[in-house]
Image (tube, rainbow, N blue to C red):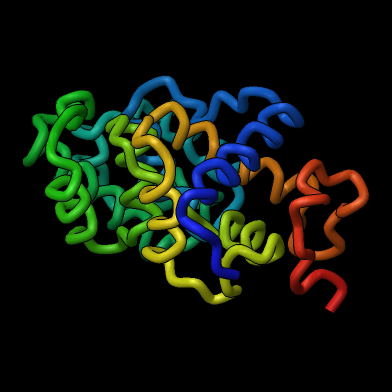
Length: 227
């Protein structure tokens, strides 16, 4: 559905404000350190957050959550610690690659990424094995506090059903919708993305969405619902 550019910002903010009124401030991403967010961004690939929490708890108990420890730990040991997160042949290597990157480029201090050149940092992350746009952008937004909007399957589902985009809209195109029409504000991007995730899990579910209780009901074209 084509929309006049002058109205897109207003409509996006209306969606945001409606979801915020429904769910309140989500205060996402839970963490004890910015590095924990980066680790979580790898662990959450293709699995639930419940499984990620188990893996993080195992790493903490083993005192292996620091970047230096992840670089030192043997792959078989790391594999067992994060087994709950699945993909055990890939994720241990990806975590080690990320730890090596942080040490090499930022001296193991995630906070030094703040205020850096966004395009450069994104290119650095995308060059790492196993890190795609969604993971890179989650790290940039939530850990490095860079103003970039994270989109995911939940975002695509909601805005497809609302009639804004095609079901197969590419990541970059969907991200551009937010980046072009919203203020580049870390807090706004953080909260908006988190609210969309909450809404997709609570109401706009993959199967049998609860349209009757949906706060976006009057704004939604309900594309694909009931097909």
